[in-house]
Every structure is written in C-alpha cells, then in structure tokens.
Image 1 (cartoon, rainbow, N blue to C red):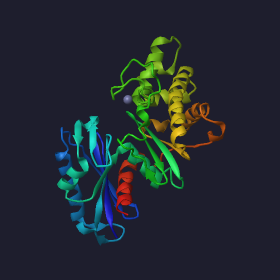
Image 2 (image 1 turned 90 degrees about the vertical axis):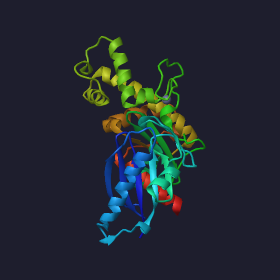
Image 3 (image 1 turned 120 degrees about the horizontal axis):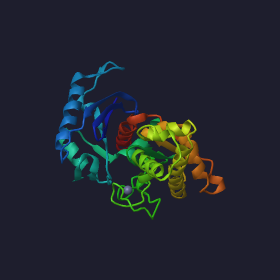
Image 4 (image 1 turned 45 degrees about the horizontal axis):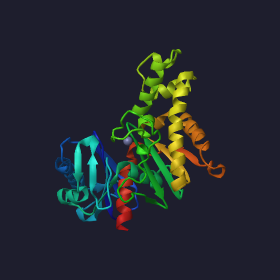
Length: 321
Ligand SMILES: [Zn+2]
C-alpha cells in the first residue's frame, strides 16, 4: 500500500493530511503558517511535521508501519496562481512573490514528486473526488470566503489553464463601471460583491443611502448577520442579498456558457447561509441562461475546510497514476 500527503497552505494554518493510495484520508492535522517573505521556513516546518508523523509510524487502521519508501509524493495547495511548471506566481495573503514552489518543496522536504496547484482549484478537485461532486461528470465550485475562489472539474480533471487562472471566477468582471479597486488591483470583480467582505461593503453602502428600519442597523454587519436577517424576513437584508446574489448568478451564467457543468457547488464561510443562498443565486442564474440549461444542480460543499487538502492529495494521486 502506498500513501501520500495532501497539504493546504493557508493564511493562518497549514493543513496536512495523510491519505492512502485510494484517496482515503487516514489522518489530518494543522500547523501554524510561518509568515516570512519566502517559503523556506514554512517548508521546513512541514518537513519536521511530516517526518515526525512518519516516525510515529502506525497507520491506525491497518496496524502497519508507514515507511518513508511507502510515500508516493505530496500534493500541495497554495493561495495564488500556479502554472503547470509548479511555479507559484505570488501569494498575497502570505506575502510571497513568485516562487518555484514544487521544486523548493521537493528540495527542502526531501520527498518527491511534489505537485502544486491553486487552493481553490484543488478544493474543487477535492469536492469532485470525495464530496458534493461525487458521481458527476463535471462540476464548477465557487468558494465564498474572505475572497471568492473557484475551480472547474471536467471528467475528473481540474482545469488549471495556461497561466493558472482557469476557474478564477472571483476576478471575473461583473461591473465595468465600478470605481473602487479589488484586492487584485482591477475594478468590478465578482469578489468585490460576493465575498464576505464584499457583501458587507454592499450592505453598508445600501444602509448609508436608505432610511428604512432594519435588523442590520442593530449590530455590526457581517455576512452572517446579513443572511440571518434576510432569513428572518428583513426587507432591506433581502434586497441586499438579492443584489449580491444577482452578481453571483450573472457570473455563474457567464461561466456556464464556457464550461456548462453538471453541478455548481458552493463552499467557503458564506455558504453557511445554506439553502437561502442557493435559492437566490439559482433564481438569478436561471434568468440569464437558455431555458434548457436552467436545470443545474446547485449544491453546498461537503468537505468544509478539508477540501483543499483532500484535493491536493487527489492531484498527486492523479499525476503518479
Ligand atoms: Zn479582482
């Protein structure tokens, strides 16, 4: 039996999973993300954590020792655009510039191959292989968190693109007249309206402009209080959530004219808004596509924040097969 590690490098923690050759997750744990301008220190932390796990030995289920030689490789998810050559083109969240991450990781951790991909793309692959996308031929996943990420999986393979941005739905332009800049430097990106921060921004604009009473005026507006208020029937909160859902529905309709997947899956913190979010986005989506492509499956993600780590393992397993 062979094994691999799936690693998801996030802004505050690095998630590490040990998976069996068939993709089953045997164990998962976290270490803090060391914040330095280059990745060497963080890769060393990962090396120490992995070697420590291998020293402890046992695969709990099988009661057999996992040797270094049984490790088939490492899949790694990183928060930035990654090209097929394993180069990460900057990771703003953790302050890295361009780095040959796959090569550096193989050198420092001492295990190869290391396959690297963008975190949102690999979360989509994880959901497709082990979560909400199981059984589907194709799936688009949109991750609604502090930012908006995305990924497209067609026939089991995640689309990476020539420059690593295929599926980057969060930076699709949905408003060419926006005057405020997105984190990426452009104006009018989906992320400016549909991320948790974007939804709060839109809510505050509406609240400042309007005089009606609203539950939203009673406490700090967050994506959660916004959707809770909408669910409680608050008129202004419903208007705001309709507006942000309209942007999402528009972006998804545009995306479907390119990739036309079977399922559309929603992950990330904002997806905790649940069925109400799905209903509103689906309604906006349906108004913008051809009649026969209205019946898409709109689903919530299943793997939570393990999706990136699971998808990273899946990427490695696909590459070595
Ligand atoms: Zn942007």
